[in-house]
Image (tube, rainbow, N blue to C red):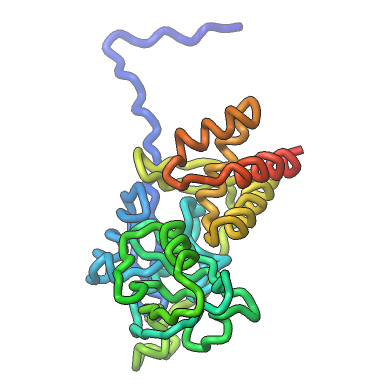
Length: 294
């Protein structure tokens, strides 16, 4: 094999190939011009960049969806963003209060959070107590329970508070609904200010946001990993009343790097101990991931 040609005396090293800047397009879901953002590592920084682009406070943003301006929980932004995804930010709309009487153990709510201090309703079970209250909708942020603010609480903490409310006693929920497009008078024309459906990327690379450390560009999860994460997410809903695809993916990662069930349990305690997963949940998750991953 020929060796590389010797470098001429005084010649400089060729410049390293610069990584392209990752710039994402964004709009306010109820209608706005298109903005461009970059340079964020986690969800809080992402919200700060969106807020700066549109001249609003980061706390105005309830959650974001990818490639759709609709309140679609299947398009909810989690810990990963496709490199061609279009980000729609849903901001605070009307505040409303509802009175609920807990006549059953379960209210029928599934809670998630935006990673930046707001917990909100991801799913309402048909036929449940909450389903019978028309004012409560998927996408509503839960701001207070019985006038006790829960801003800053994680989804599992809010779900636990709701589970522990006594039966037969009424309580109040203060909710904030996302601002709707019809709230923006004069922005319903076909101009760039109207929210548009974005083309969904077919690429496999994603930007993975992290609570600590820099964001990284990674391959999207494999079909097997995605199936395992969905099983874990279902179990999170069943045991804890929450849905969190990013948490589910982290559980799958921990399982795949563990030599056995005991090592998996220790790994969960080390990495995700704040969630205090019950033992039966850990056992069932280990079995479910094993089934999904073959």
